[in-house]
Each structure stands twice: as structure tokens, then as C-alpha cells.
Length: 350
Ligand code: PMP
Image (cartoon, rainbow, N blue to C red; front, top):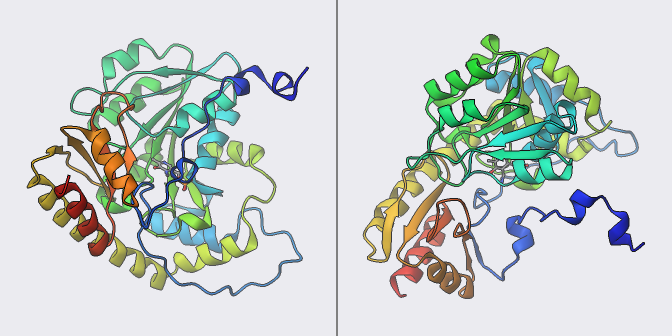
């Protein structure tokens, strides 16, 4: 047998996640991964590299719990929010179970499920990018984990809170509901963390990759009740967080770090408003969807042409042409003022 044939069948069939970095491009304006456009500055304070790190570093757990308004026992830290997605599937899904998610949405729910050999059920969002609750209810049989991205990537909008509460009620005792809040800092009042006390089957995913401007750190969190957290702790790697990562994450969660994050959010929101207003003036733009995040989903007359033309000029955006219902749409991360001007100028001259 070839090495390929020796690998698991589901891995042979797997299309890996098309991450922004994997897609490549030779850009000087990177607006395809919803990163913050500039890097914060931190110095390492812990240089004990000879020792294994704490499995769940106390400074990070306590800092994040305090920031999120929960108790430390409600927090698990992992290698990015992406690791949390996989931990939940690994811990809760048997071979015959399924996960359910609602496209267009974040691609890693499907990739992680497929990697684990778990079936995916999809119930597309409605035309206004909301949950189709009656269809979800109809398809819940055998579903162990439901993923809801809120605010949703790539559409940028919030799923209605009342719909999410209905979903939580209909899944009680049957499935875990994962609410992915990777972009929640851009609309903090929308968090579902306040509902943890009411729903033992709610898990919330968070990250330092977006508003905290620390995508390079690879640090994310799961917020849930202690029973669920303890289950994830059984399957997570023994030392998920490298010493330098824990060191910098703990600093980012101190008051000075949090204040810096708030400034980054304020800058992003101001730049997003400008970008949106100026995009709406361009004749090639059909629609700029409302956004609660650090990116804008934009529908063009010919989205692929816009994407390709800017790509060739070193302006790397995220093409959404193949995403469910998003023909001619491109996702644009809010960049610096200068980067946003480059985007607008390049589209104008098509
Ligand atoms: N969820 C969503 C919706 C995302 O967009 C991302 C980042 N692309 C993640 C989770 C994962 O973030 P990270 O692994 O960088 O923490």
C-alpha cells in the first residue's frame, strides 16, 4: 500500500482548511484573515524554557475569567479557538454522531469534523443570515454538537439572541451548542457568556487573535460550566500553551493590555465606518452588508474580477464566491487608514 492508502479514508478525502496563509499571494496589504493590521509590543518576562509550562497557566486563566466576567473554573485555554473546536468534537462525538452548522459560516467546523470522521449536517442561514430554526429542529436527530458563529464569519452579522435561546432550549439534554464569539470584542454587549448559568450544554469560543491583535500567539479559550470544561481537559494535550505564549497572553489580559485592546477596537470601528461609507459610493459595489466585526462582506457586480485585480496588485482579500449564497462577494478585513485607501483606490480604477 502507498502511504496515501495507509492514511485514514476520511483523511484521503479531506480538503484541508484553506487558511489565508495557505492560499498564499504576494501581498503588501493583507486583508484576508481578519487580523488587526499592526502588532502590539510585549517583552518576555518568563525565561524558564527548560521546564514544561503549567497545563492551564494560572495568570492566563484568571486574567481571562476576570475579563470575561466568569469564574476561573469556567475557562479553558487552548492553542487558538481552532483547537477548542476540535476538542469539543473529539470529546462529544461518537463515530455515528453528527455536527450541525449553518453556512455560510466559518470553515473549520466542517474540517475538524471531517478530520475526526464525524458527519456534518448543514442547515443554511436564511436570506437575512439568520438561523432556520424549524429546519434545525427537523434535522437534530443524531446531532451531538451545533456550531453557531456569532457574530458570523464571513457575513459579519449577529444571529438573533432570541433564536439562540430557542436553539439552546431545543437541544437541552441532547447536544452541545457552541457559540463562536471570536469577534465578540467588536460588539461586546452581544455575548452569550451571561447565559452560562442557565445552560450546562453551552460552550463559548473566544480568541486573542482578533481584537487583541495576537493571531501570531495562537491563544484561544472555551467558556463553559465546570462539568463541560473538565471533559475538555481530559482530551487536551498535556501542555497546550508554550511558556512564551502564556507569558504574553497574561500580560495582554492585565489592565494595560485590556486598555490597549479597547483602543484597537475603537480604531477598527472608526475605520470600518469610513471604509463602509466609501465603498458604498463605488459603482462596482452592489451591497456592503452591515457588520458587527472587523471585516466587511461586500457584494460586487463581478466579485471574482475585483478579487483577482486587487490580488495582482498585492492587495489580498478573501474571495467568498464559493461560499453558500455568496456569489460575487468578497470579505475585506478592516485595515489601517492607508490600507483601506489602497483598497478603495484599486477598486475605483477597475
Ligand atoms: N472562529 C472564527 C469565526 C474565526 O474566524 C477564527 C479565526 N479565523 C477562529 C474561530 C479561530 O481563531 P484562532 O484559532 O486564531 O483563535
